[in-house]
Amino acid sequence: MQIKLSLLALALIGSACLTACNNYSVSVNDKTVYTPAPLFKDYQLADAKLKDCVEQTIADLNVTKADDLIRLNCSDAGITSVAGLDKFFALAELNLANNQLSDISELGKLGRLEVLVLNSNQIRNPAPLLSLLHLQTLDLTKNPNMACKDLYQLAQNLSPNKPQLKLPEQCNKG
Image (cartoon, rainbow, N blue to C red; front, side, top):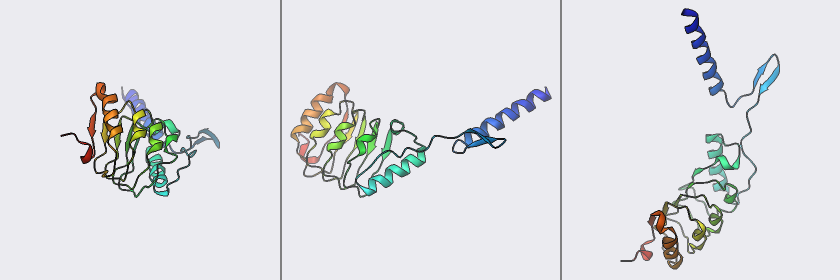
């Protein structure tokens, strides 16, 4: 019984060590037996502040390929452009609230988005959002110059999904 408990404890300690060391290469007798995948770097983003946010998220979540990044929170970052963000096609949740965005055309290429938060920006044209048919949550409040026509169409497109839509004040039908 004592030997079984010792072997079990040794196995648990070994497993914990391997899990905790997943960012390190493992060598035995000067021979590398495991090398972790490198962090994903094959992307270019036009906005330096968006790039900083994405780099930090990739490092925090140990993202090794584009489709591993499914959640991104870059709120309050001073971002002015989302150009290049379409590389992360698997994004399901994206928070870009409280930035300085006006052009969101690249977001229309993120067809897997379910949650999109764009409140408190300078967006005028919401037309790129018409192609996002999986949205469950969309927040566009505090975009005072946004045109409403395409938002009404988007609401109709998404109505079978019963999404939570928060529209700019000027687009709320009384």
